[in-house]
Length: 58
Image (cartoon, rainbow, N blue to C red; front, side):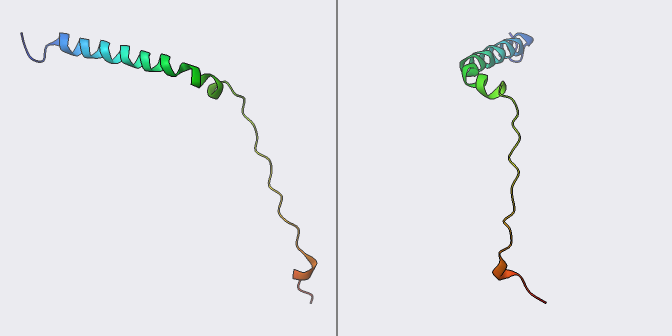
């Protein structure tokens, strides 16, 4: 038996994929509301109007 046989890499790959699927399945409920929400435009900012006391008269 070799230390770095192809079976070792295959088993690591299967374990990694299986673990990733378990983590994704555990978090799938929290993704539903974040992924399916429609885009919403931000409200435009309104600049404050200048006050009469700060207008420089010529």
